[in-house]
Length: 329
Image 1 (tube, rainbow, N blue to C red):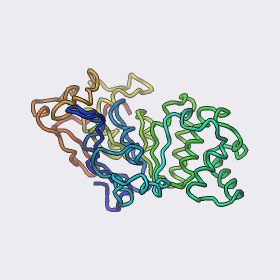
Image 2: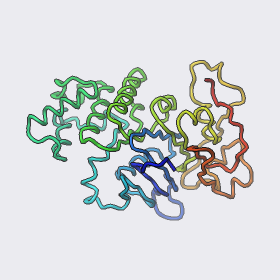
Image 3: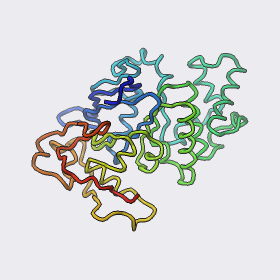
């Protein structure tokens, strides 16, 4: 699906159902995609669409109900925790809340050093201290901050520490799970610039989960649009924002704030109603109950994710929708 070079991450028919019985919560339902080495893939969608669940499954913080997760060619979806342990250093996560994800009883030196010790990456006190200082410098913090506790840092600084902790074990893949949502707007730009800089300097491979479409446009190479646990569209970022082919993508972009509302084009799509319950998803296309272009066939057939142009995939039965830009340029 994604070019000639083998992807670093390849997901096939991934599912995550919570609960038993006839109507489990279908948090993620038959999702397939891949991530190239060195690529930042954006994952967007409304709250409850399954974004964070996918991120946690990719690094096996959650065990999937079904499907495959290939990391560097090896399917890790069914590995035991014992067999996963040697692979943990290759997959890390930056959590959403920098206040809750750091141990308040550990100094920065201990927090970063613990990861180094666990994976044998800096043997000896001198090498350990040198590596901690390098990590702090890498994320724009002073080396002397190593003796501070998390409560002595601002929210933005704590998120930088979260980034440093993820980078400490030199992972090949990072999940950034809404890393900006708990931060003030004035601080968000600093963390975005940090991630962009690290992406270029280190060649990071990253799944970037966010509801902020502007940040995704700036940071990501390609974008997946998720709705009720299913993929609606995948495309290179520039293509997706200029020529969205799925009605849900168009509605998301139309609803995104723009600096000058007067430049928003007329006839924009507006989503009506709420996202359906994942315990009772609509038949056929899960988006049909809110789609302005629905027709009878949409209730009967689950639209396959099909390539409509090179690198551009959508799950929609209609191919006659206008492709005018959904928001001002």
